[in-house]
Length: 108
Image (cartoon, rainbow, N blue to C red; front, side, top):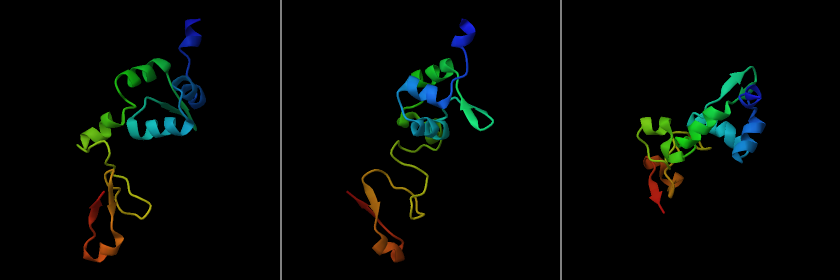
């Protein structure tokens, strides 16, 4: 019986267990180092590893190890926006009309 309880879980099973969407699971793997193992095209999970990751705050956006290593606040991303420029912190936007002068950031 213990063997069945320690089996590998699929994306669908782990998302149901955590109560999130498939997209959220893939985002957590990519951005928040969710413990997952690639088996061919499939991602598999050990429930106890995921439980420990959650307890350690793994899904908490403010505690992302990669973001913490770069010393960025939780609301700042190093990804680019759909216009090719960097994403700005929450509450700020880029003024494209001022791009010739080096651009500026508008708070608000």
